[in-house]
Amino acid sequence: MHIDIITIHPPLLESPFSHSILKRAATKNLVSVNVIDLRPYGIEPHRKTDDYAFGGGAGMIMMIEPIANCINELKEKRSYDEIIFMTPDGETLTQKTCNHLSTLKNIMVLCGHYKGIDERLREHFITKEISIGDYVLSGGELPAAVMCDAIIRLIPGVLNDETSALSDSFQDNLLSPPVYTRPADYNGWKVPDILLSGHQKKIDEWRHEQALERTKIRRPDLL
Ligand code: ADE
Image 1 (cartoon, rainbow, N blue to C red):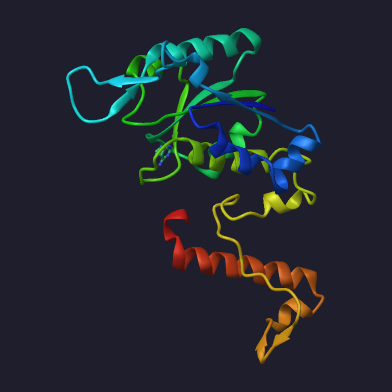
Image 2: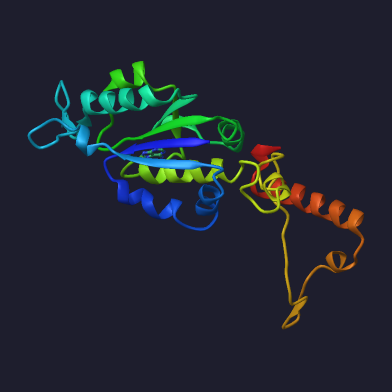
């Protein structure tokens, strides 16, 4: 999979892709992430990328030309399955959407800022608008990193134990059951006996029950 991310703040995206699982995914050539600085596409003499809103109102709007030029240049090199705009008024990101996006070959992600982007960009270039939740962040960079993390870890081969992505919370609309590791007894706080029994079938049943119980209590809307 190849991901191009357009931003006016490339450093905000450096760290998430240079560590841990996302770094390993890139090292194994399972994904390539290219962060594109929008600034060089800005309007001279100051490489401006934003301007006042027609009709007035507080806040600057990201201009059409720099973004259109950047997107068109990228489109000359690749054909994109989706051009995604990160925005609080997009569809809320779910595991289902991540599963789908993880199967695509090329995606482009546009990070917004200020009061938004010129609506014509949304009409003519953007194929999907995604929000990571009902709260407003200062820009689309952190949402883009969150979305890419959720997608990349699903690409086969990225996680060592492939089944571990399948048993994630939400994959079957259930939250994950509680998990434990050594020691089996910490100052009298004991691990449930069943997990030490070696009885795999019973352990699986117990985990399923726990997952159901936890979902009923914490997220009944998922059931
Ligand atoms: N940009 C600002 N807030 C956002 C959010 N919640 N989701 C996606 N992009 C955003």
